[in-house]
Image 1: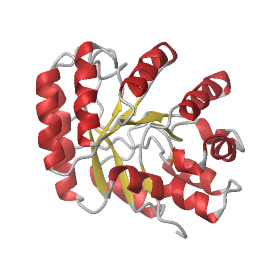
Image 2: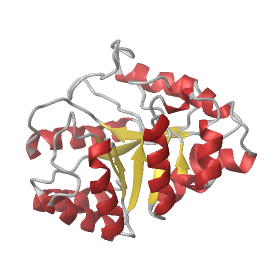
Image 3: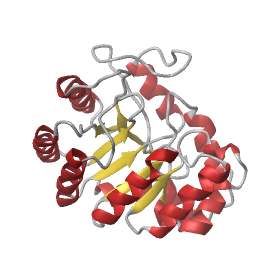
Image 4: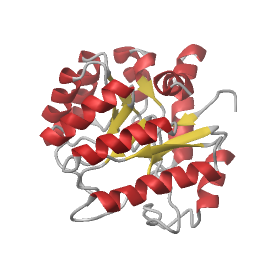
Length: 257
């Protein structure tokens, strides 16, 4: 691979905590998960463990966070843990953030409310949590549906020193609206994971609109194809400097790794 590539948006798994959330059950093991990414020339990856529940208590949430740390111990030079917080447990979440920060964790998310219900992103409890995350200099990666966009805007306005990465570019008006928000706020960034890059020229357009320094490569593997996303990105007409920023440089700058 010509470039250093960090996939900023994956969802790993361990047999002891949940299962592969890919639609077809592949890769079948944690080892295969990382082998697939490494075979593409990806040098590091980051993301959270994801489960599905109608209600998420703090103890259950911590099983996913602890699993992320456990996986980092097994793959210390490849996996960067992403963790969850819970708006109904702000005191516990803030203590956990401080503990995990001390352990070297810098990334919150991807947070996905529709399958990991932790309350509205701008609830009173969550706002307390974001204040702590801002103080620590952590990054929050949020999956935000259209009805949640006002909450997102509330967060980035209230905490201008909190770095927030909006997951998935989407398509059509969905994409245009998100681009406008990222352009409006200096602390808001976009990751290109998911299905967005199936539109030819979308990455070039995002870089033109936002600047290469505000776009991060991600795949949403194994929900989506890491290979399709990576080679889709590499096929677009970006300069060498733009590729370096999007594929790894921005992630390294925001997280300090």
